[in-house]
Image 1: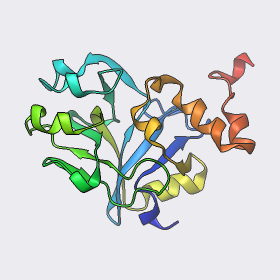
Image 2: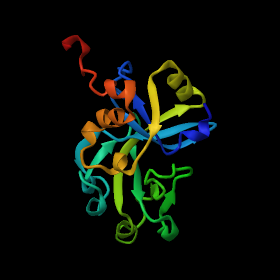
Image 3: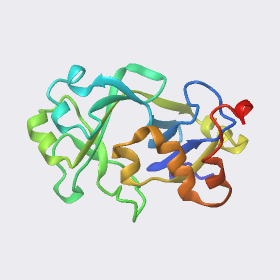
Length: 193
């Protein structure tokens, strides 16, 4: 698989992936390069308001305006994603390389939370803040995809900034159709089936 194709895409955990960190997760790939891949989990909202962690950004955060667990790596650091109009890119916002046309992700980028929220925040249409991230070394993710642990699918803006992140895993699988749509109803505990 060509590594450059993953930036701006989703990694959807297959039901066989039972590791607590990634069980039923939907990961948005922020950066994919020869030396590794970095992403954030989109469907793990925390009960911690954004304002309690990064002052003054809560007013600009998309609903629910809480921190999200981006993954098991670097949980004491944060990554923020925001949508803006690329032609009018505000300072402190860096567009992602390679978003897919037609997905509404052309204006998604990384937000510098050290910048003044009153300047940058008002330029953003959407904002989501993640504690930690998901990371894979060179070749590691490719191996997991080949083993069937992840499905790689297109991402849409509503996946990143939607108001009901808890149901994202099922919604993303369902919209794929076919066998993946059937997996969207896979029981949380197969022994209860």
